[in-house]
Length: 172
Image (spheres, rainbow, N blue to C red):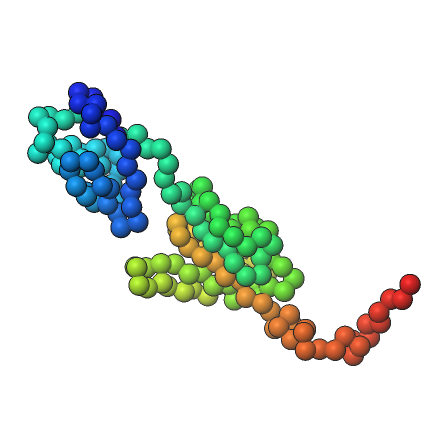
């Protein structure tokens, strides 16, 4: 934050997880959800109590980029930047696609509704892809999480003796 006529007030601040910035001589100010011009106006108002017509410039150094999370039976589970309009099918492709153990018909999309609540939506990606109809392919929002569960066979495989499947170990 740069003060054009009073450089002694210049400072670098970080927006805290609670949405406030702690400003020298002005206290804590809530700025979450504000654009740079809105935050500039908010801070100018706060410093108007101390300075006569303060001229403030805000320079963003870094910000939390929108993201989604892909977890479960995908090639590369993890956190991904949400750079543009992305659908669930596209997000799964970005995460390395489905593993052979994936249950394509029960992909869960978790979307935060509030601080205490999330909405879970069950998606049948198999039906969408088999029917060549992606009209029900949901567009992601920042913070969404996709979970791809294991299919029934991969859940049972550890309990099935391989000798009963006709698999014989190779001997050199």
